Structures are given as structure tokens and as C-alpha cells.
Amino acid sequence: IFSWAVLEPEEGKYDFSFLDQAMDNVYKNGGKVVLATPSGARPHWMSDKYPEVLRVLPDRRRALFGARHNHCFTSPVYRQKTAQINRLLAERYRNHPALGAWHVSNEYGGECHCPLCQEAFRTWLKNKYEGDLERLNHAWWTDFWSHRYTSWEQIESPSPIGENGVHGLTLDWKRFVTDQTADFMHNETIPLREITPDVLVTTNFMAFYPGLNYWKLREETDVISWDNYPDWHKPGEQIHVAVRTALLHDMNRSFLQKPFMLMESTPSHVNWKEYNKLKRPGMHKLSSIQAIAHGSDTVQYFQWRKSRGGSEKMHGAVVDHCGHEHTRVFREVAELGELLQKMDGVVGTMPHNKVALLYDWENRWALEDLRGLQKNDKKYEETVQQHYKPFWQRGIGVDVLDFHQDLSPYSLVIAPMMYLMEKDNIERLKQYVANGGTLVCTYVTGEADENDLCWLGGFPAGGLKEVFGLWAEEIDTLYPGETNQVTWQEKDYTAQDYCEVIHPDSAQTLAVYGKDFYAGSPALCVNQFGKGQAYYIAFRDDGAFVDDFYGKLADDLELPRALPHLSEGVTAHLREGDGERYVFVENYNAQPVCVPLDKVYQNVETGQMVSKELLLESFGVAVLKEQ
Ligand code: GLA
Image 1: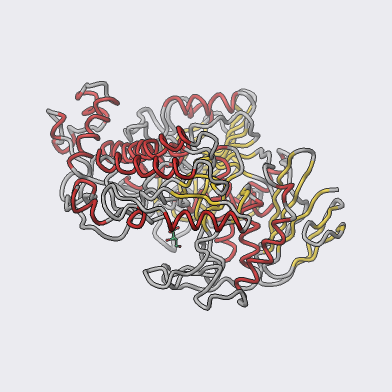
Image 2: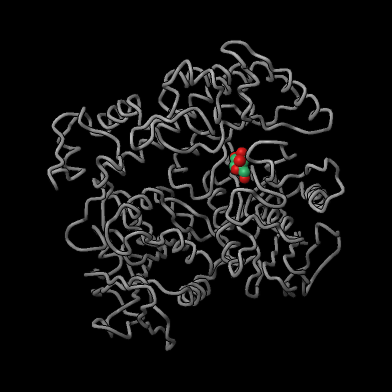
């Protein structure tokens, strides 16, 4: 990866000797190579000769040569050059026994605002709006503040020195950036797929990276991979980080509903955070097995050995500058390797989850752009995580989907803060409930259509008022520290941030607000619709309510659990296939715990049988095979 200046030191002059040697050495030592294409960083000569490959920033300044990930995704020259070097790599290593998979580019991201991209954006828009500028003007509501376009040429990407308040434009630009990046990736993969049709193609994703809708990029990949660098030991946030990381692993598995690859992780620490704390003993094993518990079939590192110079010379690695293996980190990596060798049976297995939690990039973009509620941070991501945690804590598996996936396999669908809802998706939700599904939505549901135009006739949009049996009249945004009280099943809970005022029609009120001018009005409702039921949670809470609420729902729906009893900060996950079931038990507490077991298992690491209870040390993990 990142070796283009070595592989092609001058235009058209190639030298693959270093890579030949690396491939041969890995093979001789029994390994495989996930070989990257070099488009994430290009040689100097290219920017000098073809300035169009340099990215243009939102304020329309063209970047200088430097850093990495700084190219234009539209530039025909860059597309031609990347396809060409990829072709040469594929031709050279097509029969090399070490070639294991293709890793296309690196962490695709960013956007370019050059004239070529502006033109491509206009073409994309003409295509989307079928050449009808009036349709675009309507979708973007451009008469507001006199923003009407009278020719396609007037359209420019959003900019801090230009247009930045037309929500439809921002949303379409973000969609375009995703499509253009996917198209760039597609162009990179053409020679790889042609010359090495049997070699898997992936690219490495970055968690909830805001700039790309990964549901689109997944279509270019055969296997999903992602880079995982959590703040494991941030004081007071241990469990929070474990839950967030679990959610991200679940989303990466859900992209293709297949096992994925943990492409990058650090065995010790990173170097780019504010505080680069070491992983405590045990955490490396725990965090690596966590990835596998949620569906990864690999554990890989950035980086094997620290580079002597450059900005990552102090980033964690398997081999440190000392150059030998007598280090704590090396020993931990080797120990993990021994465990992984005993886990071949896990490869290819999957969980079969009954809960779907929706996290939708377009909804996120629209919420981020929305002027209202809490202006700068609507906390969409945190809210999705808050609704995920009760399941994590109970060992109940969750698939994390966007709004376009098939919901029929699930007993429970949760769509927190789903503000942006297009007609087709509303229909699918209705069908899901009508056919017997259980749906949970929250405040700000169904307020805008796919163009970010408000739905008229009362929220939630379209037929959803009938599904939930209520309508939402207004929403109160609370200042930090302000709270309301919600009483549910004779217990008081704390409402914060948002309290929506809703009016039940056919819905049954389950909880009410305790304070303010809407005291006594409903805060939680349920409605029977067709064969199913739909819950509407009108407020955000501090986590205690959603925990109790989903705990009861999990019991009512008899959702399967990996283990029956898990204490705070302990979780368990299931992978199954070929008649075998593996349970992964993880302890994120700094103290040891005793976990009750209901069956007999074999501890894959020790080979010993365990039943009744399992003792886990602090940050301990066990891989159990059901007997
Ligand atoms: C990213 C990159 C790597 C490296 C690591 C450092 O994930 O893909 O090249 O820079 O970060 O943590």
C-alpha cells in the first residue's frame, strides 16, 4: 500500500523488485498477502505533470501535493493512471501463490470541488431530474431566499463561500460524492476482476465515517473490511466504547450479511489521538475476539513493523523499533495467534438475529443539516447506540441496517430518529407492521421526504399516523441540564433533550410526562396495526428507560439470548453454522466476573469442558463451543 512512487518512480518506468521480494518472503513464511492498490497516495511527478489530479477544497482552493488521500475522484487522468497501475499489479501477481485478496485503495474519503467534479455533479443532477430544471428547483425549494436556478451551469457544489443553506443541494451533493467514489472504485476494480476473477476484492471502511454512504460502496466489494481504533481505556467510557464498537462490527457484518474482515487494528496504541494510551493487558485479546464474536473472520493489524521515519513512526506495531520479539505486545499477538489457530470452525459461521436496528446515512446527513432542535449536535449516532445497548447487555444479537433493506426476517425493527422518510420506505414499514412485525420509532419520525421537504398533513408522515395511531404536534428542545419526568409502569424516568407532544388517536398511552405545560400528556404509546404493533417513544431519556423498555419487549417477544444471565458490562454473542454453535463471552469490567451457564460448553482455548459457571478475569474473554 502507498508505494506508488517506488513502483513507478518515473511516468511509465516501473520497478516491482521490492514488492516481488515481499510477496516471495511472505509466501515462504506460510502467509498470504492482501495486496493494496496504491491510489491512496500518488507520486510527485503525477501532480506536477497533471495538476487536475489534485483535489480542490470546498472554498475552491486547489490543494498542493502532499499528505495522502488528496486526489480528485473525477479526473480522467487519475482514473486512467490508477487503472493502469492496478492492471500491472494484477498481471504481475495473478499467479503468485501469496496473493490472497485485493485491498482497493485505502479508506476512501473526502470530496473534490474542481471544475471536472462540478461538471460531473451537473450531469448526475440532469440524470436524476431527467433534464428538468423545474423539478430540481421544486425538490430543492429554491424560491426560498431567491435561490432559483435558471440554467444548469449556475449549479455549484456547496461551499462556505457560496451556497450552504439549500438542504436538497447538500443532500444531493453528498449522494453524488458517494456515487462518484463508488464509480472511482469500480474503475479501479475493472482490471483486477478481469485478470484475477477469483481473487476477492475489498476496501477498508471507517466506522460511521460521515462522508460516504457505505451501503452504496458495499456493492463494489466481495467482502467487507473495516479499520477499528476505539479509545478503549478512556476514563469512565469503557462500556460505552465496547457498545459502540460492537454496534459497528454488527453494521459491517450486516452490509453483506456475511462474515467480514477486521482489516486494521492496533496491538497496542495509535499515534493520532489526543491521548495515545496503551491497551491494558488482556484488552488486545478481548478487542480482537470481540470483532470475531460479531462476525469477523480475520484479525489484522496496522502495522507489522514501525517505519523508522514518517508520521507513523510512533504508531503501535507488532514489531517495535527494538526489532525483536521479546516485548509484551509481540507476546500478546503470538498468544492471540495460538487461539485463532484453534478457531477454524468459526470461519464462515453467522448469527441469525431477530432484531434490526436502522442507522441510515441519508437520514444522518439530513439531520446534520437541519436547522432546529439542538443546532449543532442532534446526537443521532449516540441515540442509535442508546437503543442498541439494551440488547448488547442482554446478549441479544442485532443486525444494523439502513432504511432500504428487507425487514421481513425480523421480529423487532427499531428506527430511532428516522426524520427522512421517502414514500417507498413508509410503505415498507407499514407492510412490516401490518404483517405482524413490532416496530419502535421515536420523536422526529417521518418529518421530511427524500428531498428534505417537510411532509404536509401532520407528522409522522403519510400513512404512519395510522400505523402509530397518533400524530405529533410539536417538539420541545430542552437546554443541557433541563429534564422532564416520564412515568412508566409506576416507575419514574428522566427525559432530556427532546420531548415531543403527541396526540393518540387509536393508540394506547403507556407513559405520560410529569412536568411542564404538557404534563399528563402521552410520552409513550403503542398501537395495534394489522397483525403487528407499533411503539412511539416521544422523548429522549438518559438510558434507563430504553433499557427497561427493551428488556420488557425482549421478554414479550421471547428474543433469543446467547446466555441467560449477564451482569453489567458483560456480554455474549452467538455464531452458528454446520451444526456448531459458538458463544463468545466478553467482560469489559476491570474486575473479574462469574457468568452463569445453562449448557455444557468446551472452552476452545483450553479444551476444557465448562458448565454451570464461567470465571472471566478483568477484560477477560472466552470462546465456548456448545456440546
Ligand atoms: C488508517 C490507515 C492506516 C494508518 C492507520 C493508523 O486506518 O488506513 O494507513 O494510517 O490509520 O491508525
